[in-house]
Image (cartoon, rainbow, N blue to C red; front, side, top):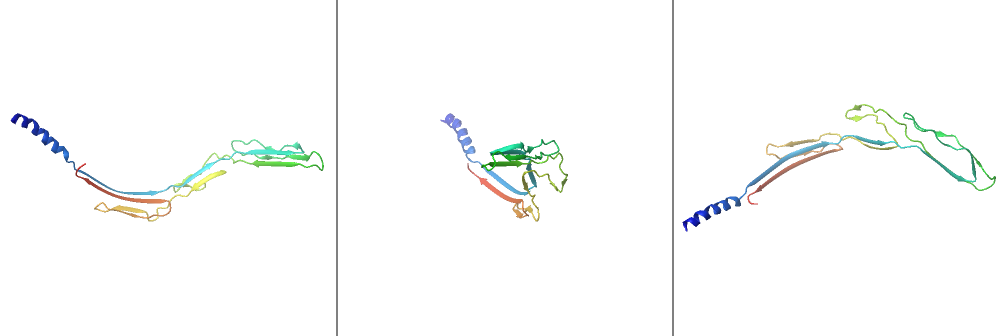
Length: 165
């Protein structure tokens, strides 16, 4: 019987030692963010179209070819009516694309003072820190103060204690 008890007793002690688990987690943080300015600008291309009926074309309009430093330009056109007094239709559409830009102005204060703007542009103003602030007390309690437009302030305090899992 003693031999059996000596074999079983260590198993009982090991089982009771692994049954309890103590875990402690403390997380204190303050996060402050000021959004930067942004400009997204896409060049639009040039296009020309003309259509009609009972029209004779002496000189068809259109566009001159653009270059690496100049946009396309419209050409002169001349149209006449084929049958005098007859019904006619005519439609002409032109889009003159953006002039290519090969250089951007320098950054000033973290933003472009005069960005290159093309025909399709989205701009976002940068945030202003204003009174944006955040602190952690000696006890780890976060305090945040709202800032200006384009800012976020996040304070977090997490305490977790687990005796048994």
